[in-house]
Figure: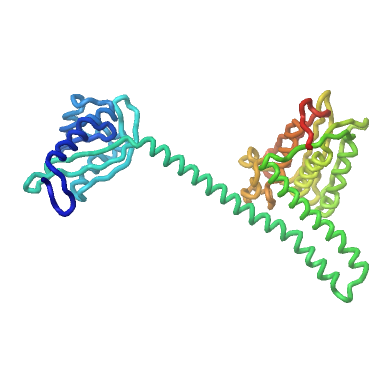
Length: 385
């Protein structure tokens, strides 16, 4: 009976365990090797995991199990040295099978000593933990994605706060001026347009946020109605003239002279136009221009919204319709913004079974959005109930 303060087992148990571990168990591989790291013993589990039989490996160095890049760094030698000095060489790394494939090995090397305490060799116990490695990588990727999403959210929240302060500051100043006992009526009248502009900015921000939640929940839909293209375009242009005038940007509308009948969700369609126009004005320098050009073919209306403003960097161009892109790309040259308006625009256009694309030759070279929407409600489209 083997006995001390730590363990207690019979010699029969010891023999049974060794036989099971070396001859029957497939989940764990056991390799015995000498001081020159030559393999002297090979268990059934080692054969099962690696594909090599005992006859093929006995006499070979343990480096045969290590991948080339690890052999180059002599990590097989390092594992044995660690076991000799520390008492155990724990390791997790890629190992090789007979067919050349790799598996993630998790195990340890232990020193074996004679009765006098002299080192006489090592035993390496390992298992195939490739499935755990894959799960770990998956969790690592999930964590990285969570960190990225959290960074986007943090950036988004900070940008929303900044965007809210922009209109709130002049609103607060206007209210304070209007509260003064000596304020003149003409001063109040002069402050009202300022207040209206800032309220409109806040309203657009809130609408973008609400629409973003609808998009994420899959609850945004369209209600088709008959309209005429030119008045709708003019209405959208008129809504943006105040901002354009304030920033010193000229707006230009070019549309067919013959009335064009369309079927769209008018309010959503105007929302698309307003968002694109406001963006164009926002990123166009004083003295610049924004053009809205409309044309039609047999089935679609095609809208070209072009500016000669800040343009879009090449690395940002493929992501411009992604939510939070602008907020997460402060150095992109696109200025401040919550970065969800264009994602909402893309969703509205898609609900009309249309397409939108963006073109820009780079920073300070202007931007052009091209929108294609069917002239008539596509068959099978569902109206909002």
